[in-house]
Length: 106
Ligand SMILES: [Cu+2]
Image (spheres, rainbow, N blue to C red):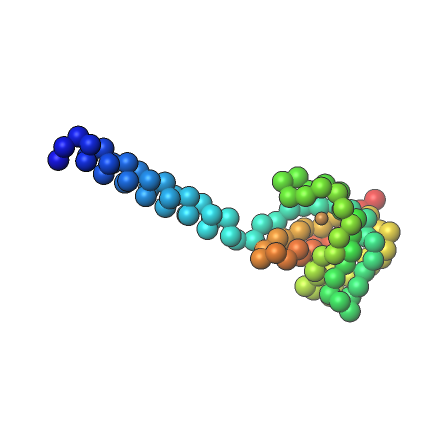
């Protein structure tokens, strides 16, 4: 094998390796991520299985805003009303924002 050819083979091999490791990295990011968040309840909508919360900044995800979260378990709504300060766990998966463990805070 001449020098140019072996250089080419090594380069292509390196590129394939790079592409593969990048793909594995992207796939590893697929699973649902969770964040701890705090905010003030804007409105509770049990019939819609959702809650609207003015949340504070969530580092690594988004700034402060008022937005709707899906709520999977109706018992989450017990004792929670508009204007309550709350903390909750936000799960992000497949473009869906789910609030769970919603708890009133002082
Ligand atoms: Cu938001």
